[in-house]
Amino acid sequence: MKNTDFSNLSVVYVNCTLKKSPEVSHTSLLMNVSKKIMTKEKVKVDEIRFVDHQVASGIYPDMTEHNWEADEWPALFKKIIKADILIIGTPIWLGEKSSIAQKLIERLYAMSGQTNEKGQYIFYGKAGGCIITGNEDGIKHCAMGILYSLQHIGYSIPPQADAGWIGDVGPGPSYGDTEWNNEKIEPPAGYDSDFTNRNTTFMTYNLLHLASLLKANNGYPNYGNSISEWDQGNRWEFEDPE
Image 1 (cartoon, one colour):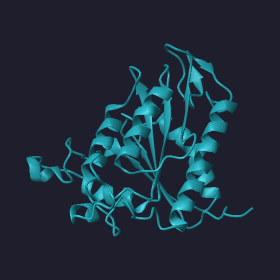
Image 2: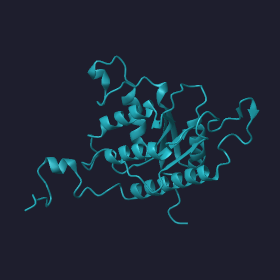
Image 3: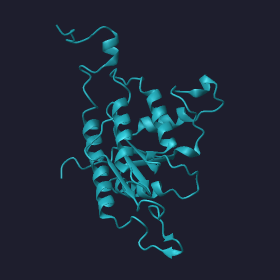
Image 4: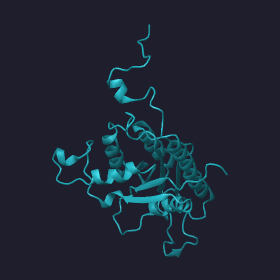
């Protein structure tokens, strides 16, 4: 098939679990389903467990300039901005994405005023998606907030750009658990969910197709969407309504 060589693409997965390494992250286990597809398609894969790093809270590019003693965000951002695709993974807590995921979005927002070589906002030409895990309802709610945030700062969102798995409402096994209440689970929880496996596969390939199209066309044309042109007074044909 045409346009199915993705070997020139790169993806970064940012796992927003609350668990520091080396504790097992259920979100990471589901992200592995997507990562295996990326690896099979010869995509360059990178992963960041956000909570493992000293990332300050705030909406400026470097919070050490705003009274924080340490901030690893500038170094992490270099990895994120190099990737053609960003996939954010998060667990659900109280029906919402994790606090770590919210911090990531805030730090991405801090960079959104920067521009690329065409004078567009810096995330133009990159694709974004998300993976959600939990033991309660909220996959679509969490995805709605994450994907809105990503498109607002400039990421492009393909069709069906989210995937996830939740167990029964209330206490129960999390994705990938092999035991619950002293009873073995075979296969591990969620691994045999056709719905989750299908959505994760479709999400991964939709991101690959969109990122490939964007890269082949050097992102978006900058006619009508260049912040540098706007700031220089080139307002195209914008007029106040009569």
